[in-house]
Image (cartoon, rainbow, N blue to C red; front, side, top):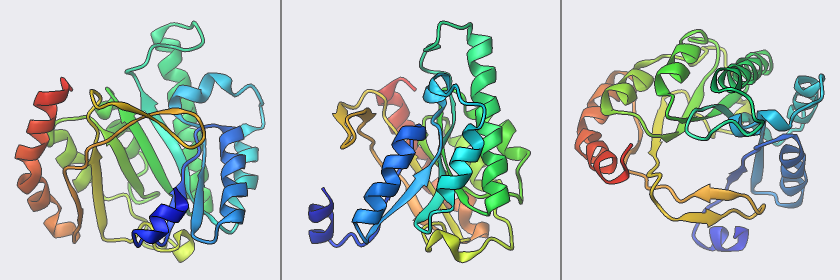
Length: 231
């Protein structure tokens, strides 16, 4: 995969963490390949697997690696049922606890975040509103409406003093969304996990004043994706 990416002109890759074990493996991969960088974190559907009380400290230690550029993949996922046999309310509360703890860590370390959300864009937006001007994020697996996308794009969550620690992966003026079609075929990730094959309908590098215009430009595309994916 890395060789083919290089042949296609891709010079840098971020390998995303989904749990503590996966994040540690990402550091090994980043050490092995010069063009690969890492994100470390606990995915919302993996929170039940974490039993250690010092899990935040473990992520903090991993994030000290010079090739870690973000905390992620973090967020909320209300699409999948509880994987620990708990109630929906308890499952969602645990996800939010992990989400906020990792946003706090990203703020502490001045790292960007990679945010997952599915069937919970309003709840994710509520959490992110508490971190306005404190962290900056890339929101992917976006399955909301054009209006919800506009809200996320208009949300200013880029600290002015954010350092160049992220190797330029998350420039200050970047606003990007990856619209995921849940009905797309599922593909096997290199680490053996199952993943959704996404369809990108809008990814732009824009100034803050242009964000809404980009959303409006892509609104019909977003509606098309929604109509074909039952989002």
